Image (cartoon, rainbow, N blue to C red):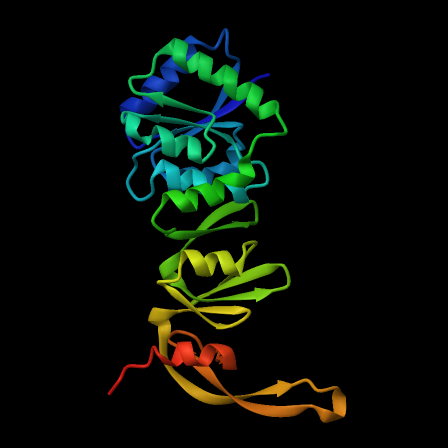
Length: 265
């Protein structure tokens, strides 16, 4: 089986060496080099077209580390197998925590790369490859995520956490609302709340709002369903968010906690 391989490393000499090594072992390790990138974001932009089976991924890169990059791969329909390539052996445990199939130290030897590709080929054919565990493991490795991964129109987008004004659970999806547009993700509101408690606060059972976006509260009203003719309107509080015209209702249960955010005179 010929593997479709994509190289991600911010240093051109490192990419050149991997390309040369792949050429040297092509006889024993059939493969097709489908692309390369010098940053995580450039790689993300190319993934849909390249559709690699395997990524040779540098760990230390500007903007986003390879570990964080791998943690976002779980939203892809067919995530590639990951082989980390780095000069620092102290990342080994973290690499395997995000289910990388192998970990190569620079300078990479041809024989070691061939061994790793053979292992990756077998893992790629296995239905037991644990791609679904990447996201959770990645979240545990990072102090907290910096992006929400969104799979949209055959492209993986990374929405910065700092751009999100609020998250709202709707059916099986969560809608991320920013100041410019909305995105759909499939995650648990509870797990996001636990991970990003310093950034977001729950105002209702189906909504989290960014603490920094709260600029005030105002009185509102909600319709309480009491079977048709007996429906009644109940006064409530709503949160005002900078950059959003929508007013989110605050449940009675959460009001005590939320109003504590008000600055004392």
